[in-house]
Image (cartoon, rainbow, N blue to C red; front, side):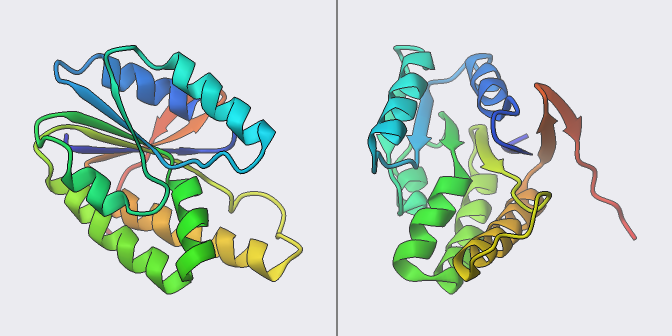
Amino acid sequence: MTLVLLVGGARSGKSALALRLAERERAPVVFVATGEAGDDEMAARIARHRAERPAGWRTVEEPLDLGRALAEVEDDACVLVDCLSLWTANVLERHGADAVEEQAEAVAAAAARRAGLTIAVTNEVGLGIVPSTPLGREYRDVLGRVNATWTAAASEAYFVVAGRALRLEQLDV
């Protein structure tokens, strides 16, 4: 098990589960944070997340170059990426949908090749209403493809709902 993907809605328990999975590893943990504090509310969220992490974990704040961030981590360390949703938004805004999808394939493959456990957290935004703006619809569609790419590369994937995880199985049909 080298890559585990946790996908679910907002406040579904994905990050809490990811923290527990990383804590049980007998390896150093590197937390790769993709969020940016663009306003006071987001700054407060980031501060709360930082406070939840064990003091011995190293944090790498990288909103765009996820591939570089992973490449710079020791191969046997446990990496927790939180989250692909914000990373997707960041890259989409600055470089466009094609760049997001190209990078997603490369980074997911690199994460799956690591010797140490990589845990990635992402939101599922395609189950709700259709966004009213073109950018909202583009983000929903791109994130859906990013999630599918990472799920395909993962040795395990879980859908997290109300603090509970459902294992996602690959059907051979």
